[in-house]
Amino acid sequence: MGGSSWSTDAYEEAARLRKKAGKSDFAYDRAVRSSRKWEIHPTLNPKGVKFRESRDSDAHPHSNAIAVFFDETGSMGGIPRVFQRKLAELMNILLVKGYIQDPQILFGAFGDATCDRVPLQVGQFESGVEMDEHLRNFILEGGGGGTNHESYELALYFLARHTSIDCWEKRGRKGYAFLIGDEKAYAAVNKQQVENLIGDPLGENIALRQIIAEVQRRYHFFFIFPRNASHGSDEEIQNFWLDLLGQNVIFLDDENAVSETIALTIGLTEDAINLAEGEKDLSDAGASAGAIKAAAKALGGYASSKSAVATIGEALPNLDTDGPSGTERL
Image 1 (cartoon, one colour):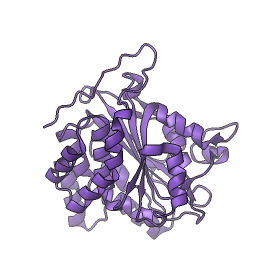
Image 2 (spheres, one colour):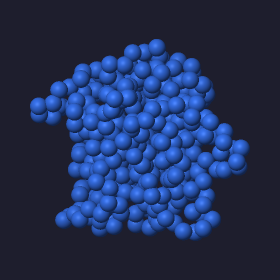
Image 3 (tube, helix red, strand yellow):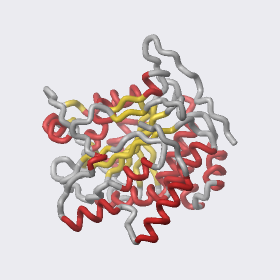
Image 4 (cartoon, helix red, strand yellow):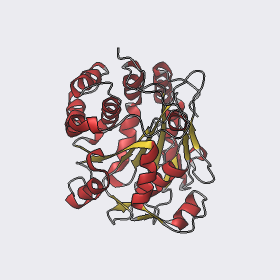
């Protein structure tokens, strides 16, 4: 729901205490593997969820929804671990540098619903360190079916039909949605998988392009494609996503720079920075030179053409829009 506030001190203290106690950052994943009971964490189970909500509050009157979904199969499974270690860096850039007001972040993970035991996990939109808890409760199954496809479309279905975000509903401002992966989506949302995993009875399958269009109505949707993942050099898969999303496919040379890439993408789309300013901000936040270089290279084309991307979506009837994000750079 996003009612609390981010604290880097609290995030770092929790990490210190885990290390002192000898606990893994992803302790739930370790416990599942030890017990061999593949049960999704209760806070991440999408079954029966009406909405994951990003809401305004007294502390966050101009909430902005950001959803980040990870492909956790195969070589992609290490990315959530790296991202978790860089979470404070991302939040400090978004908040301290003024890229966007009142960010509320939802983390999700997906695999292959045709064969994996835990193919969809979805947290809640959070403003505070609760988002770190959701991220660390992922099961990083590392499965996949070996068909060059994963269930990206299930994550998109949940975003399209099971999220409710005040930035859009009250102000006509789109949220942000990022999928990170290196394989194709299936051609359609499978109605039986939706019923089994989410609980919705669908009359028929939903075409991939249709569900993408539903997501894009309320979110700036980006696909981050790590080039050095298992299928990162596969031109057929690259072209699959380019055909669907065009310039919103971000080809990233270093998968360890996902956090930096998301920060720059938001800053550029919000017109809070240009690319050079973003690189300096990342350096000030402690990002490595390699990660900064990779993120800047990945977004070079997008930065050049971002004038075609509107921050304000088409407002819903009878809703006021709040114009630009209203943030001030420091």
